[in-house]
Amino acid sequence: MKELELSLNDNEWALDYIDHDRIIARAIVFDDDGMLYFVRAERDDEFGKAALIETSGGGVEEGESLETAILRELREELGAQAEVVCRLGVVSDYYNLIHRHNINNYFLCRAVSFGERMLTAEETNDFHLSILRLTFDEAEAEYERCRCSKVGRLIAEREVPVLKLARKISENEST
Image (tube, rainbow, N blue to C red; front, side):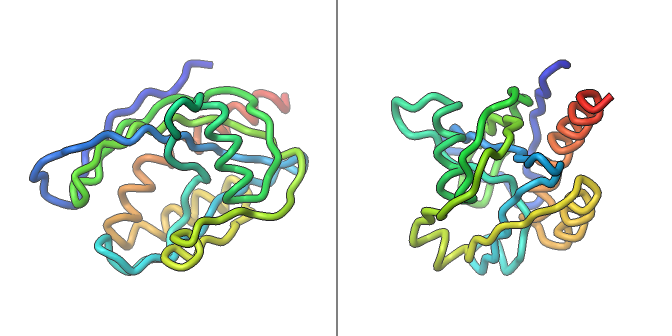
């Protein structure tokens, strides 16, 4: 199946300037029961007050491959030992408010086991990260529910197409 390639603009905040790129690894994570795992971020910052759904993932560290980065992020945020099933694609988007261009590299990953999470102080204290375990339909509904905030709309625009591709791959695998 063809990888997704999307380029999105930030239509929520005015563009002043972009001064940095962030290379990010993200994943749609599923278990053997077909359930999906996401993070819930509850934030109250320059982006506003919102409770959001988002794929697990984060910045790629210097010298780290995309695959190594996503497996590290899944251990940290979900406590998941996982394996990469396939690459889903790349979504380029912008956060004009913080002058950043995001290069989101998405993977489909299977959770093998779960253990202790290793969250940063910021993830615990500022974003109050928790885990969501949802079906495809529940995840789509949650992204729609979160569109009531500006940042929720940005995240949904970026992630719903990836979720739909993961669903299509999942349905093809089960037939």
